[in-house]
Length: 212
Image 1 (cartoon, rainbow, N blue to C red):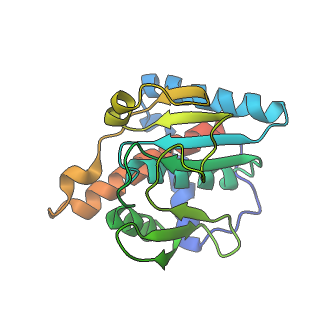
Image 2: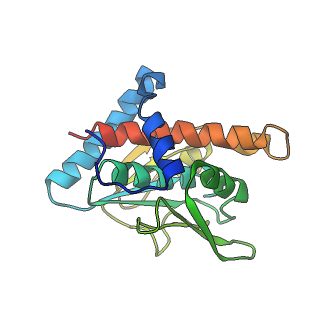
């Protein structure tokens, strides 16, 4: 699938996305097999004229699940694929970690802080007129998320173990990522978050590029 010619991302984000799609060879073959499963699920849903819901799940809904939600949504917009909705959730409610938000901001997303407090709400958009991603910590089965007809994308091993069954999910697909939390408070913090964000971006763009 080719990039959509009329996407209007911020210039910084557009450049970032254009470079990510040249990195598919960096994805290991076994990862591609799992990612192809997601592509096939999306293709099947869209061919049946159904909306395609993807919920990215990790324990705290603080880091990797938000990266997954945002990058899958952005990749779908980049390729002009309509009918895909992305969500995120956890098995505990904490907060969308501000380091996650700052990493997305560094790639060119338009970030807005909607509310502050223990569990702040942010929005992330690829352009002023692009679809809004709502970022805050919530349970995977909260009212804001689909409770049926969705694929549960498990992005951390802890979430996979803590949540062996995901009620209502059509598919349950495990693609674990190393938690960038390990670098919190260290000189490598920003670099570690940016590396994890880029890995997830690369793989979500691969998913969308291989929908048939």
